[in-house]
Length: 607
Image (tube, rainbow, N blue to C red):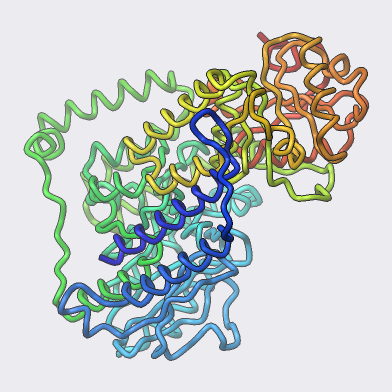
């Protein structure tokens, strides 16, 4: 009920926003609306009233047992932009002086449920050596020694930035003797097993990313509740760094999801979305983001007092034959080995080490043996050239998200895409998905309509595959404004644009004409980016009134799928224009590389 009511409020908000936005949309089927009342005031009033009703309604439990749960009050956390619920009966509140660097102060409710909120100094939570030491100190001093605690709930205070993004890879890089990782992993395992020895239910609430060590942390808990946000993803991507899960992941994952699914996750490093995670048994429940904490509290209380019993996922007869019989298991290992060899050609040792860890754990079920073997394999992999090279690539990809061109002096709110073909529509799609207002313009309504259809069809596919909610589709669509030469107000819309991305066919004369037309109506700070794949940027900038604002942004087709973006300044391009192109490209989810204005740029020059 809580989830449905929250969704109703979100969808109502988006529908109202779309109606207001569509006042400004103009196409054959979307005419201007001249209203005598204030749309903004009406939207604000209706949304506020509805949210007030939902807030009061969503605190009412739908089950008899939950009426005994300590009441909590919803509040909006401006720092993290997500709903959180704090129990007014907690023994510690966020107003107390903070005792820890990586955690908020522990809260203990009147039901004797301890709430541990992860909140490190970085934008995302990571497991570092220092964080592990502080976690052990917190647990020993405030949880393990307190006999009155009946359950523990782990949450993150990072909002959309997730639960734990993984281990701090810099700690591993900075170690001179990688063999010392055996003892470090052993310390981590001792901490997790020490947590389990408390013998109280442990519940983990996951909103956002729980990757690598973050998911391994969650796997030591008894009950996992994930949010249905598109930002929520779970996975063990260590193989992409030439490593393997070192905190028990190779042993703790397959009892939850089955051998085949566990091997697939660990050998590919793929992310698992919340809905699929529930179906495969990785998490027990999926709820709306606003309900994460309240549901975790209900679950913890139910597990502690025995009113809630965890139900294990039943294994199908086919999976039983494959995973639990000697014939089926031998066949499975043969197929896994074939697939690994086909994808790695024997050049990457980590997939084979992962397989050996899982096999060893099955043959040596004693906890000491299987976890010892896992951490020894982890330390060996950390010493390989392959791991060092893959970590170097990871660092390089991370570094590309930053630039040294300075801060853009104005906010980028509106982006115009000129040309609604396959390339232009793809650029518009990835831009609208990131919250920008996007003007999609072409010569006539028919061309714009084809571009719109391409975008909405892609979004519908995502909804069908549960990669996007209907609410998010509506929100994205409200960011998209179609325009054509026949739209009387297109110049008025374009005048407010901060960045124009041109994606028309390869004609130097046409591109120069578009620059002249847009420079006459846009603000002096507006940056003009061309998606050319062959024409020199310097040639396109000739004759421009503001050549310092001209830059190349070369996308690859299909834009929603291809991660690379070439950013090509000419000699006269300003640092501000470079910064705008880099910031927008990075926010679009692209890997941006700055290349010289030479024939073929970079990629085509390599081909």
